[in-house]
Image 1 (cartoon, rainbow, N blue to C red):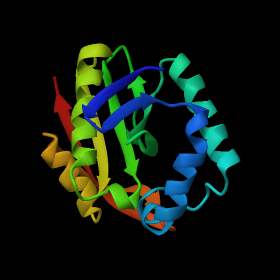
Image 2 (tube, rainbow, N blue to C red):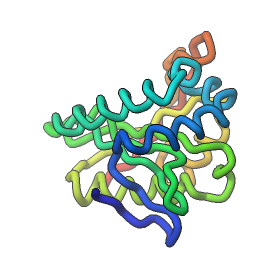
Image 3 (spheres, rainbow, N blue to C red):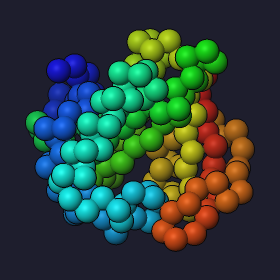
Image 4 (cartoon, rainbow, N blue to C red):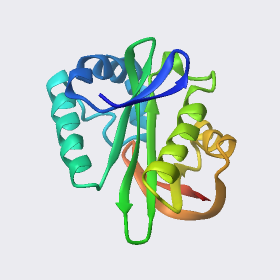
Length: 175
């Protein structure tokens, strides 16, 4: 199984359905926060659903449309980070991420995002990586800025979550 070291106790590991139980545990613990910003926050209701999602991700990775990793801390999968909407012709992709609440607030996601940028630019040969963050999601906006993303614009009613549409900040970084 392929993995990348972010910190001595933090790794990115390609998604594996074996991580479903650990990831689902974090979804349950962080559900109210996830549901605020992630359309799937309320709809992922079982370990089996998470396992099916991870299996789906593996298929999309085989098609080169997705690169997805579990964030592993002290050997336990506690979140995910991905590159999606990969366009090999235009050499760009978009970032998505989430992390269990008990692991937030100490720079883990920023470090994981920086590692993902290395992977995207150096291993996947991307030229540009984009990131959308709801304007009201201060934590996600801060992660983007700390990782070196530049605000390119604001998109009206771009993200549907928590039962309504929200404005988003569009960030990007170019190799």
